[in-house]
Length: 230
Image (cartoon, rainbow, N blue to C red; front, side, top):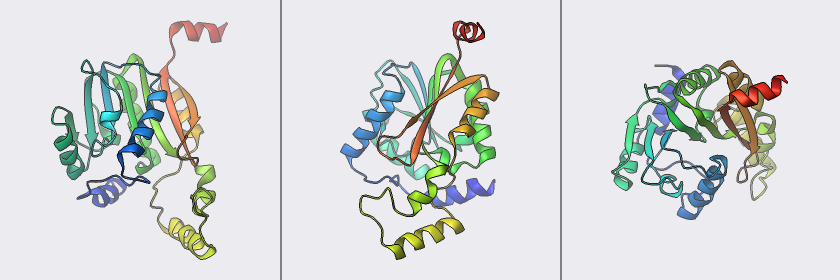
């Protein structure tokens, strides 16, 4: 097993709650509202969520009865909690970066997940997602830690209460040794991978976490390509 996968699988084994700022229903409602803006208020027929966790967001995302939803996560304890909440959901225990099947999806998305991928794993995720993406579909990596803001985050500049110098220094030193946030990326990393797989990418800042961004990938239509060529 890849050492990065082993590290995070060990970390999440046995956990039933994601490590968000607040584990409260109103918090998940606000997060889902931001995600639905990225979905462009469309009602996709086939949805694949990578890193679906315990399903806390699922009921707020607004998928109707006509939507075929599949959730993937490598934490069995999280999936068990999800199944308790939503027994009708199709859930698969697998590593998100390596997951692929022979289906095509109108929406493939993750939220706060790709930070647990190293660059090679992110490239693999892009390869599989591009192969599964329907012609007019969207591939979204939401809430990605923004590398250029990493040190400001570690200094406590985005905390509601500013950290003391000692706590800020301790946080910074811990991140140098092993960052609990995982990987931090630049939007150019996503733009490059998108281009490799014939996708276009757009980027948006996070409304809830100013040190994160959202990457939204889609296929260029023939009309868009010809307009650019002209």
